[in-house]
Length: 488
Image 1 (cartoon, helix red, strand yellow):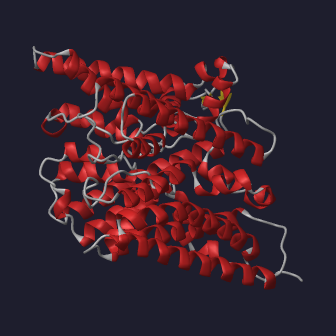
Image 2: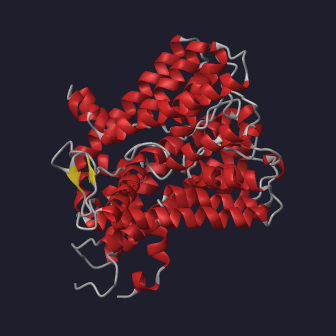
């Protein structure tokens, strides 16, 4: 039967069905745990399972009656992204809404959006939540960090021809070599690396005598660069070696996962010569050197412990993990605050769990500006911008410039909206950049006067939209709401 619909709804629903199955499978063991530690949350998980099963059945019914269509366009891909991630946020909110007494629906949506966006900030003290709800948050963060669509592709080969058009969205490999000729082979290898990092960190934490429940929570939220623990992101109570372990895995998790594959294959040259990796450590080194020098000049009694605190917090911001060791200078020292906000905005490498503009875009943007300035003094020169020794096409430069412009506009609009709700300008800037980049709990240490315990419904909605926009990389949302997207 010929398809008269403007979209390939059959393929979209098929991917959506598998996303529901994935969420259901993750929910079942946590539901069992909740029966013993939070009966109210147990009912929430049961309700979620019922809704998921209902929608899976509805999808199965519709799939039998919708016409076949082998063509899966980029437009179908964007609609799939919106449907899968939007539904994931809605379903993820149900246990929070039912399981936490006094929680409004917008509170639950905030928690779920933060979870899927790998943002460790929570409206409810993490030390007061039951383990089942914390495990639910951490599990959503872990899936959100890897990418729910990428998880599906890893294990359902039949979806690859349909989902390959949106494969780039969850893990962009445009700036490195492909690690496998097939999309499914690439996705599966990335999943093995992601899982291997998770298992490695978990056992390392157990060896350092971290209780199992806390080790699970720390592992899932570190690998996903979400930064959630029993102390709302504060790691000062852990030993130096545990902090060092978390620091190492924050750096690894915020590195390009394709490059990690090449490292495991002993192809070190691809890792060492990659522009993003060079800039990652160059920016980190400059930030560490400048902040430590500033602290040394400002305070003659700078101890090794203070230096480590600065290094840990800097890498936490670069990786957008959000774990922190309390440091009052982040709040009241304008220079330290400025450095941290800039690092939040830039973020880490592409194809990682970190948020922000990404180093790939930042490097290309910087080199584009440099080339333009050069062309002013040498009008006859041809404007060329390269990355990893390859000249980038004009279309790529245009896309990056567009993204950066929209990112800046969104930050400015957010700052204005926050200042209108009586938030100080410095706090408004921190919150805007932090939530778009999904940086997490370290934001709390950078606030001058804003208190998350007094967050309003208006701010919850705005922060949820910023987190979602940051996770979706902004552009897909603009494309979906444009009238031309819906024209046949």
